Picture (cartoon, rainbow, N blue to C red):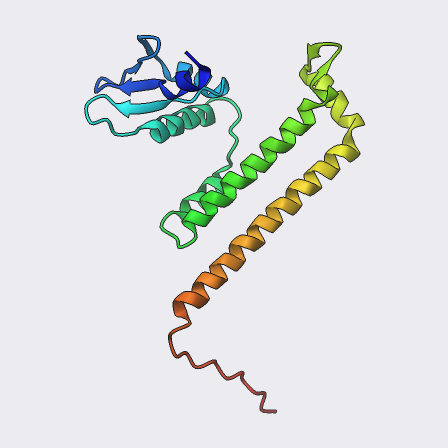
Length: 187
């Protein structure tokens, strides 16, 4: 069986007793196992065993919640509050796309960085100490990569802003608005 066919067939069923059943291995699994599938870049779908409703996002959010509760959280309360404020907002869809593209750009930079000889030292993976030492030496290169990331992020935001302006013009362009008259100073 090809690996492409294998990844398409990976189906996990969630039963009413909240247990997860991996149909590929014919066994019950835990959220930790699902997290490992994500880390291994396995393609899978989680569905409700009765209704066949896709629960993949819900399970992934559950894993993020557990990760945020244990150890060092990735998101501050401020960031989470800002994300919540976008739900129901006109820019909700664009914000999701913006975040997705930024995470992808950051991932691409990480792959470029670790794909070079920086990914290992004499055949051994980097330890945190080696990584710190490498980062101290590679400061200018890292600065350049981060500048590229910031430029890409800025460009994406400007594109999103222009798209919103164009959509607003198209939506409201047919209404006969009278432009406001600027106030004059009477001195």
